[in-house]
Structures are given as C-alpha cells and as structure tokens.
Image (tube, rainbow, N blue to C red; front, side):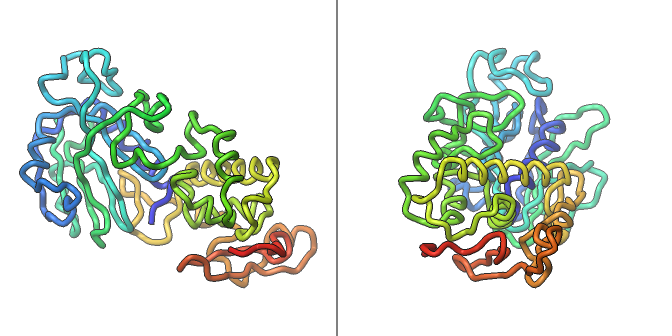
Length: 329
C-alpha cells in the first residue's frame, strides 16, 4: 500500500495540474470505486461538476482536494493555488482520494486511450500545455473517491500539507494525528501521549491516532536508523530516544520523497505514470538474510532477520537492534 512519501509524491505532482481548474464533467466508469459516497454516482457527479479545485492537501496517507462551487468562484480565483479569501467563503466540501493497494491518479489528455482499470474520469477546464483529464485507475479496487465535508481543525492549524494551508480538514481525516513532515507537528504532544502508552514502539508508530503516515516499510527503516527494536516498550523510552526515532522517520521519508517513493511493482506510480526507486536504498525492510550494512561497515557479520508482527513482517538487525529483555510486543 502506498505510504506517506508515495502519497506526497502524488500530491506534489497533482497540485500543479489541477489547482484553479474547474471540473466540467464526471464519468463514473465503475461504481465500486465510489462506494464510499453513500448517495451514489449521480450525487457524486453532481457535487463535482462545475466545482473548482482550490488545492491538493495531504495529512498522513489521506489526500483530498478542497472544492468551491461555481457560484463561489470569481475570475480571480481561477488560477493555481487560489486564495479562498478572494471568494469570500471557505470551501465546504472536498474530493477525497483513498489510493488503497493499487489506486492511481493519472493526468491524461483526452486523446490517450482509457487505461484497462479506469474507474473514474474527471474532465477539467482547459489550460495551455496541460492534460484535460484526471483519471482514477485501480486494479484491485480497494481504493476509491468520495465527496466529504470540510470541518475546522481541532488545534486551529492547517488541515495538512498544502500550497495554501487552511484551518480546515476533510471530515474523514479529522481523527488522525499529524505526521512527522507536517510543519504543525508537535513533538512535545507526541512524546507525552507516547509515554502514556503501554505498548511496543512499532505498534505506536503505526497508530494513526498518535502519529500518522508511518507505515510498515518506513517504520522498519526508521527503527533501523535509530538502532531501536520494534518491541521496545514505549513507557521505557527516554526523550532522546524518541527524538532519534522521529528524526529517523523524517529522514527516511524525505529520502524516499527525493527518490520518488518506493515502488515494488507497477501499481504505484505518480501522476505522470513514473515509478519511484527508493526500494534500492532500503536498509532493513525486505532484506531478510542479507548483511546489515551498518554492521558490515564495522567488520561485524550480521544478517537482517524477519519476524512476524501484527499479521505483517518486521525486519531488524539482531546485533545493532537487539530485542529488549522486557519487550512484550
């Protein structure tokens, strides 16, 4: 499943293509991909047709596009990254995209044949040199699109990472915490909440209500960089150790962003259809039986091991990430 860096790659690519453009028409090719929109395809299309995309916002692995309807958008707002102040009112709804296991948001020109697994097509107002369709393609149909309400954030900060941040968040994303790349992320709040938990460190990192956006791959990579075992009890962690693992999480995700994300197959691509290549730089995840590069640099023989964890896998080095004696998770 795409993790935070992959979704951020999509957001950064998408915002340049869709901000300030009007959705002129909507084609729902497969209704299963809008199943989260309870009122059905006609209401889905009716909410979108004539609306202008203001921005593309991400919190954790959630992605949404705030919308203004046609009556709320003056000519001055029909430009990239338009400020809602010019419209006199904030956006009331947003188009939310859940990529699931294989969802792709692709910018295509109308002359390009439909993809085999095309589910939804949004027609966009013309802009010189830019494709005029945004297509949602999903082979495994775990993802989808739906229209949701925008509500105020609980802390008064921006809803998520965006070009023109607003103190609003898509309702379905309001329950998740901020992610380590969010400028409004509070380490002190995270540390206080973490210390109150009685769980293992990796379980805490995967808890989207505590910190969002860190999935299985990047949790393993961050823990390897921080030299901490996934089973370390959270109530034993010192502040410096928590700072270390969060810094490692930021670093690994920024490195992944620079590489365009992590693509293990052709299902994850950016809006131009290109795959990322960060998997070439992984130090722990998926490297069972291979030498630990850090130990090898010190002349120590050690191989990455794989263990079952929450119906998934965890990858650690037994030498530089020893299991804690009191590790129960």
